[in-house]
Length: 258
Ligand SMILES: NC(=O)C1=CN([C@@H]2O[C@H](COP(=O)(O)OP(=O)(O)OC[C@H]3O[C@@H](n4cnc5c(N)ncnc54)[C@H](OP(=O)(O)O)[C@@H]3O)[C@@H](O)[C@H]2O)C=CC1
Ligand SMILES: O=C(O)[C@@H]1CCC=N1
Image (cartoon, rainbow, N blue to C red; front, side, top):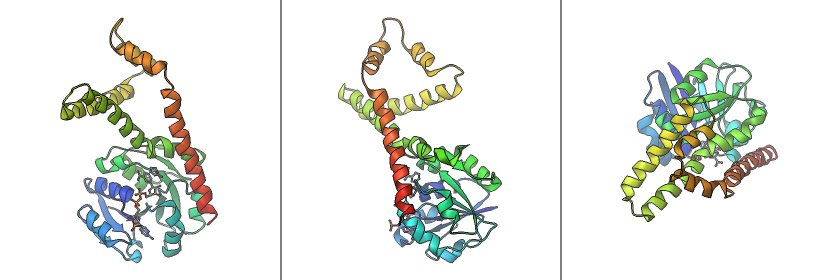
């Protein structure tokens, strides 16, 4: 049994708890300062509490408060060396956290698909942590990265779901405008993204070849692709990632200088 405490049960903390609630082998504790937030997650947790001391025997403590709240929480918690403190706050560096706790600190960039156990996560640590490896596998897929790359991972898989939602919305909105029933447009847009992502995962060829396979000669797809090729959309999507990456770096500086 792995005991996981989540400090801050808002969007990210509750997604972790919701995902873990559907897997055997975890005892979960949700901690937050807001009792109303705890009401929302109590069906996913073995225990909810506003008492910070309740996390004292947890194997893994997930820190899912906003970056500027991290110093406040670190001043309140008293963890021991056998515990793992998993910080998920964007921009907050591992060294900043480990200077203020005896626990082993790992840095995680999760995403909200944890609730469905479809999370993409990036983790940075000194040593692999078997309990964390099990937990991340149970919640989706993860990669181990050097912490110097955590800001771009934050943009790619932390913020990335919002970018993908936006693209799904753009496609389904236009389909509805062209006359398709709203529910049908949603079904088709969603399954198209799922299917395309699975095709990319399964393929041992480059994405360009997958695009070519959809583009029948003189067909429909190439007409649409030409609009994309002639646009700046590739650069704009890249710029969205860069903006999020730069903001992650700024957050690090802001928390460090508090
Ligand atoms: N949302 C996302 O998709 C992702 C978020 N993250 C990271 O997760 C963290 C949380 O983000 P998110 O879940 O969106 O934010 P939320 O605001 O939804 O959740 C944060 C929660 O922490 C609570 N809180 C505030 N102060 C304390 C405290 N001292 N002790 C315990 N809990 C406290 C907040 O209560 P109250 O509202 O009353 O202040 C709130 O319920 C951020 O650092 C973010 O960078 C990482 C990846 C993805
Ligand atoms: O927007 C944010 O700052 C957080 C971190 C990644 C996703 N949400």
